[in-house]
Amino acid sequence: MSDDNVVVEKPVAPWIAAQTQSLLKQRGHAWLLQGPSGLGQYELALQLVRAWLCDAPTPSGACGVCTSCHAIDVRTHADVCVLMPETVMLELGWPLSEKAQQEIDDKKRKPSKEIRIDAMRDAVEFAQRTASRGHGKAMLVYPAERMNHITANALLKTLEEPPGDLKFVLASEAAHQLLPTIRSRCLTHTMTWPSESESSNWLVAQGIKQSDAAPLLRAAGHRPADALLFAQTERTPSNWQAFPKAMANGHVAHVAKWLPADLLDAQQKLCHDLMASKTGAVPRFFNAADLPTAVALPSYAALSQWHQHLQATAKTVEHPFNTGLMLEAMVSEAQRVLKSR
Image 1 (spheres, one colour):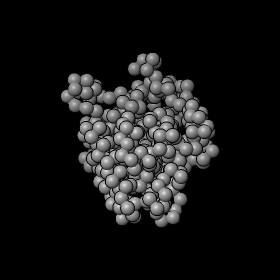
Image 2 (cartoon, rainbow, N blue to C red):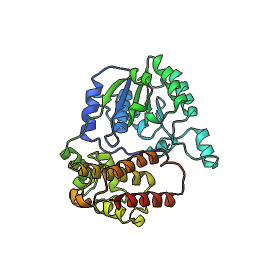
Image 3 (cartoon, rainbow, N blue to C red):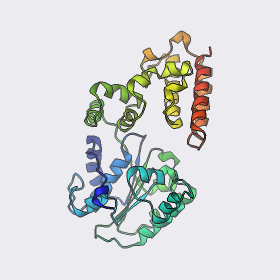
Image 4 (cartoon, helix red, strand yellow):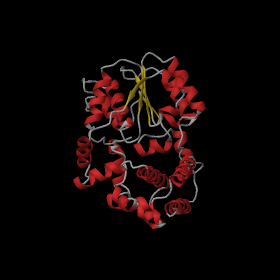
């Protein structure tokens, strides 16, 4: 990969930098970074890898300018192994294996959304090799919950008998789905929630309007990375504000450019806030003024059934169904619930 293909890492968020410094003070060959999405598990994992392999590390982390740091920037470091679904690797700029890239280029298959066993075999071979630069080796697994049973067991064997110069960092947004034996082999770190001001200032630094920061954070459940993702899609503050009414009126056009997974996330949050309002609690993701009035709220039983329906939908939302038809079906179901009494 040439320097033209350098993946420019954004400035590290202050809460990620603080956690990096804290974890580097502790010893251990394997870390499990856990917490909900949007808190920076991948970013923290990458900062640890950079520091472990840096030619001139500081107590705060990697120097950022040495040959090792540059090799990570251009995704060519011989002592780094990333275990990720192919879709995530492509998104984050990591190269696929030559075989996998050829199969995808030849349209024999689509990029995998799971961590494939072929990738795990390559990782096992990587673990057995000698480090090329003398600072040890590092394996980054993200999202770790995307391993299937076979892949997870293969990783477990490497974790149980790790070569002396190999460190692991597993980053997960659903650590409860990992094998208990994998969790027991790792030191666990629960991601820190940044303060409201830290999150808002970070969003503004990413180019978000100051006035949009608070509503985006609310919509994203106060997870800054998710809030930034909202801003880069159709889920703008005004769009989010109008979402409950659009669902009640069955307006598919309101979400026509959304992915089914994004719509599912929004409907689950709407259902949560409606159930909260029904019991007199304060909504979390929407302003109370944007929700139906107490008189117009569906029954708690109807909302509970909708919640169960959304949970079932989550199991198939990433399947290759017709996107338009799936959006229509989901909006239609929302309208049916919201118009019920």
